[in-house]
Length: 365
Image (tube, rainbow, N blue to C red; front, side, top):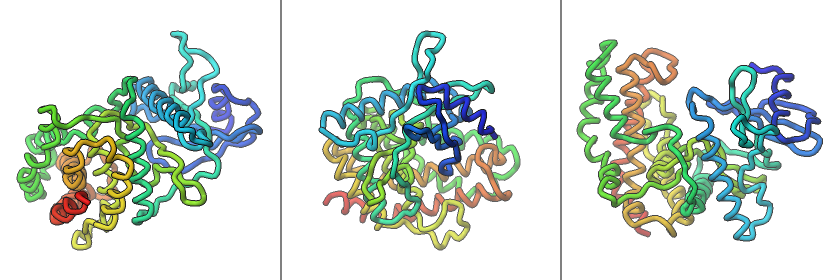
C-alpha cells in the first residue's frame, strides 16, 4: 500500500500543478491500482502499471500513445466537440528520460511504474449487462476499431499469444502429458470434448496463414465497464487500453459475448442454468456492425458466430489446463474451482453452438 505522501510524490513527477488537494482510490480494477488526483485546476487519474502482466512498460505506453493520438486527430478532423471527453489524454513526465525522451510514465523509488491521465468529468461506467448497454458497447468498440483502421504507427503485441487458440491448445497438451498432480482422470471427458472441436475452432489461424483473414488493431478486453458513458447514457469513449494490440476482430466481438451472453457467472457450478443469451448477441452485434460494417471484410462478418463460440471454448481450454497443472495461474477459492470454470465455459460453448444457425441468420440482416 502506498501512503498519501508517496502518491503525491509520484503524481508531482508529471507535468501538472503541484497544488494537490486530495488523492483517493478510484474504481475496482483487478490489474492496476487506480487513484483520483484532485488539484485546484483539474482532476487526474493516477494508475499503477502492473509490470508482472505488462513487463515491457515502454511498449505498453507507446502503444497507448500511438492509439490515443490517432483517435484524437480523427476527432479533430471530424469537427468533434469536447474532444477531451472522447479520448484518453495521458500526461507527460515533467523530466526527460536518460535517453532524452519525454515519457508518459514514471518510475517510483521502489522501481514501480505509474501513469497519469486527465479525469473525464461527469463520466460513469456500468457493470450491468443488458441489451441496451450491450448495443452501446458494441457501437463503441466497433467505432474504436474503425478509427484505427488506417493507423500507420506500429502497435506491438504486449501479451504474446494472448488470444491464440493454437498456443492455448499446446499448453493444454503439455499439461495432459505431464499430469503433475494426477487430475487428468477427473476431466478426461472435457479433454475429449476439446479434441472433438479443436480443429474446427482453430480455423481463424488457418485463414490468417492463407492470407484470407487480416489482423487489425483491437482492444482485446471488451467489457461493458470499459466504456465510459455520460450521465445521460451516451457513450463518451473506450477506456482500459492496456491490451490494445494486433488481433483478429473476433477478439473484440467474441470476448465480450463470452461474459455478457452467459446467463450465469463463469464459475457458477449450476451448469444446467447456463445458456447463451441471443438478446445480448443481437444487441451487441447491431451496435458493433453499425460502426464496423464499413471496414470489415465479408469473411470477418460471416465468421462472427464462430467468434461468439470461440472465446468460451478458448477460456475453457485455459481453465482446464490450469486445473490439470494444479492451479498455478488463476486464483482459486476452493480445490475444484478451475474444474468448475472449465466445465462452465465448455457448457456455454455448446449452448452457443446450438444457436449458431440462428446467429448466422441474424448477421445476414
